[in-house]
Structures are given as C-alpha cells and as structure tokens.
Image (tube, rainbow, N blue to C red; front, side, top):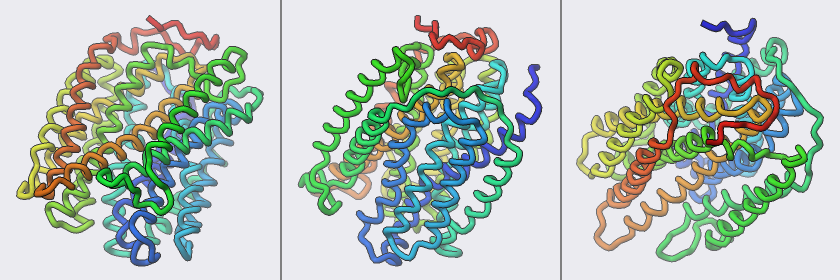
Length: 484
C-alpha cells in the first residue's frame, strides 16, 4: 500500500478537524433562532439572516478560492481561514446586539469558505490515487456530518448554557488550531504569480450574492401573496433572474480569460465528463441533505409538538452513522470504484425520501429517526465516492479550481434547496383545510422526485476503479483528456 508523505497525517488531521468545527457553525443557528428573537428583540425574519448571511458570504467568497489557493501556500491559506473564523467567533460571542452578531457570522463564513476547498486541494496534493477514497471518506464528516450534527449540538448547548456559549466553547478550539497550523502545518503545494482579474472578483461577488439573496428571500416569502417577510426586500424573482444573468456573464468572462490563464475561476474542469457527471449527482445529493436539515426540525416541533432539543437530537444518530461510515466507504471506493457504491446508495436515498413523504401527525418519533438514519447511509455512500471520483479526474493544475467549483455549487444547492422546499411547504400548508403535515409531505415528495432523477443519472457514471486509472496529479499540462 502506498505510504503518505512524512507529516501528512498530522496536517490532514488538523485540516479535517478545523474544517469540521467551521462547517458545524453553518447550521447551528437554526435551532437558536427562537432564543435570539427574544434576547435580541428582533423578528424571526430578521434573525433568519444569521443563517442566510453565512450562506450568502460563502457563495461570494468561494468562487475566489481557486485563485487564492494558487497564490498562497497551504500554511498561509490555513492561517487566513482560521484567523478569520476565530475573529468572527469572538465577535459573535461578545456581540451586544444583532448587527455585530451578523457581522461576526459574515467573518466566520469568510474563513469557512477558504477552508473547505483548501482541505480537498490538500488531499489531492499529497494522497496517492489508490488511497484517496479512504482519506476522502474522513472528509465526509466535514462535508455532510457537520451540517447534520450542528442542530443537535446547538440544542444541547442552548438548553444548558445559552446561545452565546455556542461561540465561546468553539473559540478556544479555533485559536489552538490556528497556533498549531502556523507552527506545524507543512504540506507542500505549487504556487503561481497569476494576476488577479479585479473585474471578475467584483462580478463574482455581485452575481453570486444577488442569486443567493434572491433564493433566500424566496424562502421567506408567502407565495400566496408574493410579499416577502423581509422588510423592504420586495419579491424574490427579480433578484433570482438578475443573479442568474450576472452568473452567466461571469461564466462567459471566465471562459474568455482562461484561454490566457488569467481566469479567476477556471471552468475547464466542467468540460471533463468524469468530473461533471459526479459533480451534478453530488450537488443533487447535497440538496437532499438540506431537505432533511430544513424540514425535519420543523416537522418535529410544529407537527409532533416536541421541543428544540428533541428536534436536534432526532438528526444526531444519522449524523453519527455518516461519520462512522466515512472511512470504510472510502476504502470500498478505492477497491470497487464509484458505481458499485453510488447505485445502491441512490436506491436507498430514493426509498427513504419517499417514505418521509408518508409521515403524518401521528407518526412515531422512532420512525423519523430510523428513516433519517437510512437516508444518512445513502448519503454517506454517495458523497465520498462522487467527490473523490470528480476531483480525481482532474490534473493537479486544476485541483484548486475544481474544488472551488464543487464548493460553490454545493452552496448554491443549499440556497436553492432551502428556497424550493420552504416554498413548497408554504404553498401546500396554506391550502384551506390542509393538515399541519401537508406542506412538509409535499416538500418531501419534491425531494424524493429529485432523488429518483439522481438514481437514473447514476447510469452515466463510469465503472473503473481508482487504482486502475492513471494518476492525473502527475499531469501539469492543464489540459485534461478524460472528456469522452
């Protein structure tokens, strides 16, 4: 078995642990919103921007990380990411009011946006192709488990200590990781002196911010009246259309600039079939994950009448299962390839989501937990093979851009999924005489239908094993050839 370079395990452990803590903070606010409404004296639509603002910032910063990771060493990028996150955490913990708390969340998100692509790029840089699945399996804890565990952790802290301790307990961990990374992180990567295209930075910021803002507002809008709950935001569709147009302009500019090597986000990975197909399937799976993150706490609290602690604990077993399955799923991918895992996983994901659509007001809580565990198993078998297969199809020169594209698409999927499921839930719940669970069931039907399309899409995956494929990291040409 191929050995990892000296110091690689320590570096990877530091990156994975840091990324877990940072991604965990992406979903902790969902359970804390009722407490924040009372303590900060704001309405629920305003408080919701503590989650939406985090997502919005991620969508703005992530497209720039492809360029950033080419210019900076791993240690420099880690220091920037962990420094921003720690500063934002301290600001959140000591915030006297809503404005500074929101500012702290934005700073936190800026650091998180750098860390996730940095983690994936570092794995591709130092892990041999034959062991990538095993190592990527560990990162599934970051990419999938942390958002699921976040509400449970927040529920425990809230019930015992209060919302500020969600930040004070994390701050020492962030500072220790920052010091350890600056002193001990030693992962070699190639850097370049490519010039920054400032118009692309500005265009990316406005385009992705506008699109995610529109999707977020649409999730807070009553579809029956077309009026948003967010004061002064107006209807969502103009923002979505404008954002989509600006993203298209950004894409056209990057295609033009990448011919001379000056693109902020090189889009050539999307032309590689073995990258683009797993990318689409993994993004669809990410939307399915957020259907559970968004809908299950609402179902448990509103329909079943349980408190926020129970709502958080319901998704905890599934999160634990995903974490435990990460490494063995990675090893199985190294041995059998992507299709052997993703096809049965997609079947399990599809069946569990259709079962969620049958839940009612009298469904037992154990059934909700069981279905979420089954869904989590399906997602665990999906994420690691798809992400590893996609990024492994690229040459080293495109790793940072491939990671940035993947993370950007996941953030857009989270925003679009949230908007879609909340809108469907609102529409169906507003029907005269509709039971409390009608909207949630309708939203799960939509998620289940999407999972059925994902299952059909698995037929496009190749069946080759990673160990049988050439190691693309050795190709520095930047012209990938796996386009068939």
